[in-house]
Length: 250
Image 1 (tube, rainbow, N blue to C red):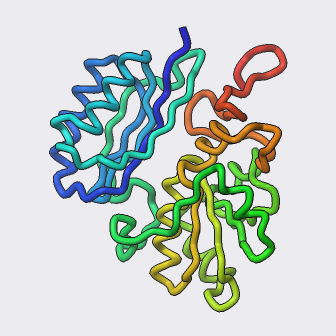
Image 2 (cartoon, rainbow, N blue to C red):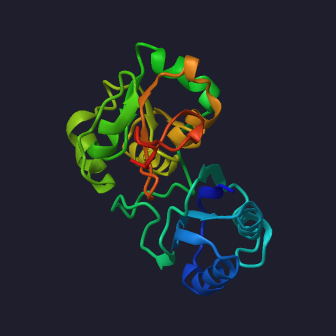
């Protein structure tokens, strides 16, 4: 039976994040899950894999259980499958940020751009006055991206600030639409741009993964594959694992 993979995040105030680590790790370990979870004062970010029942139990705990006490009530969540366990072990780590931008003034729990559902994304990025930006790292962009999207050419998300300072102008770029793998990087990037005077900022809700999951391939403006940070390497439309011609994983 294929394994179920859950990718999730939420920006939420977790001042007690250090105390949450061990209860969360123990709960996931008891279920036999493997993967990686990051905890910070600004929220949670992770991907874990296991059986259908165990993943469902873990998600219920995140959303409604005692560990977080109902604070993850707006969890961005996506499911996919893996033919083999895509992680070697379970890690629950404490971080300064759940996605590293390196600007303490940016707070996505207060203000972010406008979420765009995958069903509305094609129309937005086709508009001639929309600047479409891929907020992922250059090697990810090289594997696949949306038609016409700008590649910032960054090696890490923390370099997005330099790209914005050098290439983006609030007076010139009136409407910006951003995207990333699961939604977390472009959500934080939207908060960053709004804090710096940009007015009309949009980001793809649920990221590329949600788009590939829900938009029919014949209607898609996505080209290539979507890199994922586990041993599956990349996913295509329908969140199918990318395979080599000999049947092995690429």
